[in-house]
Image 1: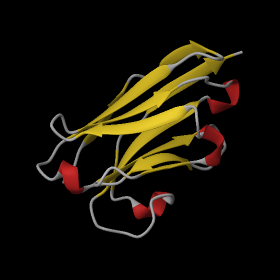
Image 2: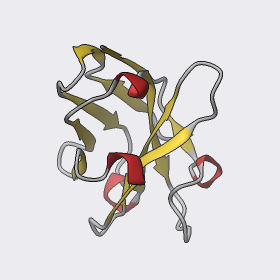
Image 3: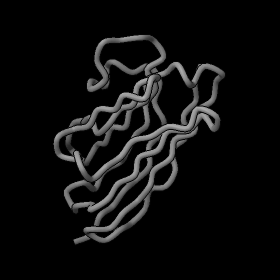
Length: 124
């Protein structure tokens, strides 16, 4: 079983920055692909970014150049640095772990464990 705990959400003005963290339990964190998703009210959960065990990253087109995903395998933590935030990016942000090797990383169904989420609110 893997437990994920997100932190770092909050209220920020448009154009501002936040860094989200996701701390994971378990001894095999370094072998997991990790992803960040977000879900706004009345909308489906959407892919934001992912980082594979080898460090390869993937991003949604809407966040490329503004968001950066990274991981620290010593601290069992994955980060999401978010810059130039927009009001439409207000959502609950979730961390997810892909404990079994899969081809893709953008679908929520491709992940095995989820955190409880952290609220990000971007004011205009």
